[in-house]
Image (cartoon, rainbow, N blue to C red):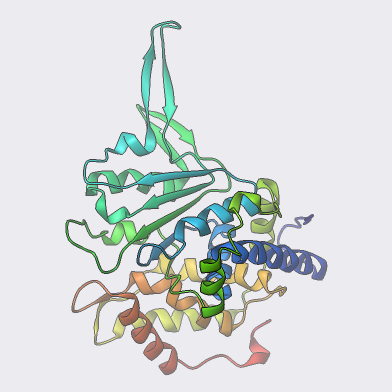
Length: 330
């Protein structure tokens, strides 16, 4: 895919078509092995291309690891995996500096966080100290060890998983950690036809065998093009009204922050470009509000489950007027 960057100018129609074609091919490849809902695949790809991270809440055996490996395959990236346990140390994730007797120098040995797609399995089983080791790299895409910053590879995606039912002996993610994730999603059970194919063994294509669609440079160009997608003032104002409504909701202790509003606008640009458009619509905002804002809501009762957050956001979306179609491109 070749996308030409023109500062402060909206992507051309050709750029939008190329981006949509790349997304379709990546989604088809990932969906052929992950076997989850196509809409979920597109959301994960959108987060990846937008430079965000994803928290998957699902029972074991739903294909979360397969999905992450497929994402790396279609973008030509590397995969690293961390199995979280209570005794896992921060250095087990970030890496360590070791003295080399032969060279008489200290050498940095990178940890598993140095991959294009990093699977952090059962993140809530790691201690808070170890969870915090991910904060810097998820926000700044670098790891600082012994005062030296080591950049993470690009593109960079953390796919963290947690079991929403088995919570014994776990450490719930604090708000600061949850806020590092662009989206919270659930793969859910596959469709009957897909599960039958899995049972028959007729769809056991290895993720590593998928065709590469984009490389790191292609993903960077995609992100640069998305940055130029048009968000009209009425759409910005719509996002602001939604955010303010969450802050005044009687069943919420805290609504979404300005950073959450910025994140929603940013990922909406990528979502629109992936659909072949050079402008964001209110429908894009509505489709993304749940995945982007759900885990950032703080109900009076405590942390919001995915189902509770969806119901609360549905209320908010129903109560805030939507801009008219003629306002979306201005």
